[in-house]
Image (cartoon, rainbow, N blue to C red; front, side, top):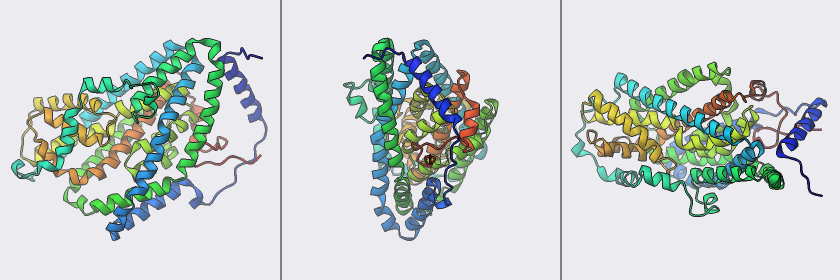
Length: 461
């Protein structure tokens, strides 16, 4: 017999069942030894990778396939996670006006804080001046070392970027590896499913069941996170060496300090205004942050971030729209890097930039950071695109920071990741749908354990 219940009715019934089940006394989960927690395993793996890369560089470089394999595993599941999260969220809500409102608020947040990150990077770059005194002649730089990045930057354009959002086919969006293409198809499919009304309830129910299986798949993949982090960090240290940091230590230290000021200062204030602690959020996401640190890729933790933000009191629709979109448009760490790196190159080559030229640099960076979104090595490519449009600073100067870019990319990814987590909560709060009590419970470990979370276990019944 056909089930004519609406998605809203189904949701209410599921909520009632959850409340009834919650009323039953639950056995507390078994305590585990510290080394059995995923965050401890990833941390140990990172330390082991650093030691191997430092004391046996060739062996460390040989570990690269381990990191590459893990990142490929994660990228394999990103498209299904985004598609299922967005479609089930939109179709279950049925309020299309609210979807547009959420998207509008998200982009307003992205534009404001991305611009603020650029400005903060520029201010600190002018105050600290990490490149001052190097007196490097641009003619002596090897421009061939950054030729590939400059070529990719030249290929990136606003029109090309916008056209690239539209996939060749609906199915190819799920196989192309482009987050924006998946987002585009998912939103349209979710809206279409919502518009057909009750006839789409069976499809929605099936997709929700598939979503449960996919997130279980994510938890299995995350078990390999220590291996992936070990391989990636061992390769980085083995290939580039910790010694490369000494040559440009001031730039690296300035960048990390600026990112820390932005996260704890700017985002910390935002968090406080929204009623939560940035430190509690960082602690809650410690597994994902360690994974991002080890792999130098924020994408490696994207599926887990989506799941954890839902569990921490953010509605599925907001999470589904803000997180994937933020991965392309809310790149706070990348923006800080661009202004700092551009000023460093100018200072190192003895080029005095006027205030007008710096403002022009900032304006170009605002646009180019969106045009190169989603491209592998986006931070370095975006910098090349920015410098190519501002002739005052030589593109060849990028050769100065090529050796340490890998180390800086870790900080870029960490800052981007935290920025997107905060953005999700802020937009949820603006919508009046952020469950602060659930956030407090999730971040303090008071919620019942769920098997989708790779660092949590299911309570025994």
